[in-house]
Length: 112
Length: 113
Image (cartoon, rainbow over all chains, first blue to last red; front, side, top):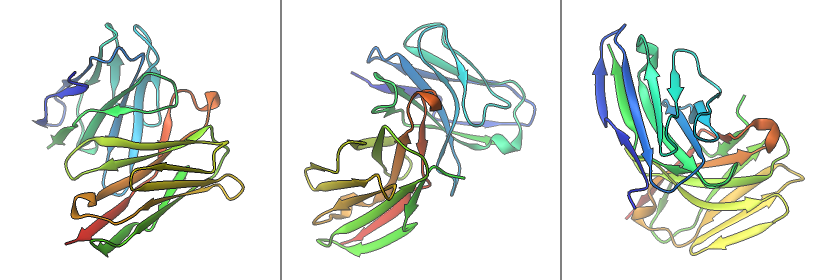
């Protein structure tokens, strides 16, 4: 099993450009999450999903949209990138709410 | 403010020594989890301790939970250079928090060979 995978690994955007980050998991997990990690701030939850076709806002949702059209995929979109969105983005999934989360390797995003 | 706060922010020890990291939180929890993050990598789950448990072991890891003090500690015994990483605690506050875990800011552990 590949676990949780993320594409791309690294991306540079100009302010105002859009992009989509893809997360895929092959563990048949219901719950999926998108986090951002900034120096000295730990992980902050952007959006999450409790099952196919569902999404919900996390702690820092502004400027991001998500979709979960298939159970195994969770997409994070930036419609108009801003320098404040420069960060490392992690996707995670879990089988049971509130329990062990499995993380992907991360996507480093630089917005100029 | 953070639900989980780790202490110390950074810890440097020699190989073979024990490393202790602490986590404090503010509200009642269902469980508390510890994760490790190697530089440039994703987080890896280490151990989960439930609110009705006081201590748990996994290999060289020992986790304690004191719900009266709202604190937890992670002890790594006989540390190795490969243990160098950031360690995060994360709390599950139950259904009222949705499906989220709340992560602390982490402790950076350096084990010198």
